[in-house]
Length: 427
Image (cartoon, rainbow, N blue to C red; front, top):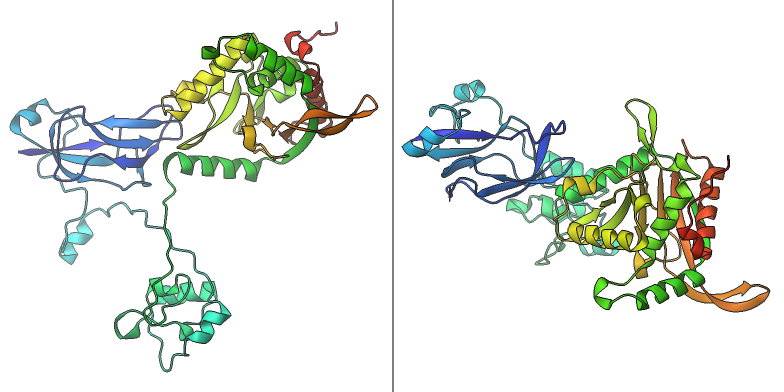
């Protein structure tokens, strides 16, 4: 019998590490070659990693949420003689040390072994100060308070007086659970909390959103649009099409209008290359469609939207959204947008402040369309109104240009026949 160490593979595109999303095997399991063993995520995409050999799993490195560097040990297999002969050349000798440190190693031997990778621990629970009413019910402790230095620090940071806390440990020692929420009083249970580790796509979304908000000076602009005529056109077009072809929403109409407007405002169809300090202006309009999925927000991309007809655009948006929600979208379908449109549909609210999808410089948000009384042509009438909420990177898009672009989009949507007319460029 011999061992084979499989290392984190190079997943391309300059990837230096990958995050463990879920293990599909554990030590002691016997797996077959090409069987799924682990799901990982890079900054580009989620990847399913198959077993390179058949054998028994000896050890694995990392838990969900941990990042493993490319080329670092990922999983160790024990191979049969036949399996050892067929194993890739990267196999390590049988005498290689296990990936995880052996228990009860002598001190001298321990110093000779490389330090194991540091595991990512469970996040510390939020410590809430004790409410005055609860404190009054707990008698003040007499004598020395027994607590570890770490729990003393947690209590100090949370503003908790340890003398008011009843410890549930041996001899009344204060444990970490005693500091979580309300104190232990008699047989009262600890606060009922659930810790959820932020991993995978949700972690990636959090990092990108934080980075975008931290580095981009957002300029928000909200405009009211009368979509009464647009709604009339949409209803007419839906009635003229077979029901099995899907109904037309506002989204493809807005995207089509946006492609016309960007012909006049090309400074909004731009990507900012921060490393080179260069704005890359695109002629093609690759429109990202922010899509809510069970795994979090994804932005599939309608490529060359300016070249598509209305029904082609609607079909492509629908196709990409379905692939994103079913987790079938490829990496190519999720990258490369030059401007993003986001819509909350019926939950759209009155206004929003969408966060720019860096490295883009603009994002357009559709809010809920509602009927309400407005003054139209000198009379109070009921019209269908929808707000457009937009954000621009104020470093590169001036407030005047941002407002002018949204006003041009408003003009097209309020007179929907103009959506189908290309921009006439002055000579």
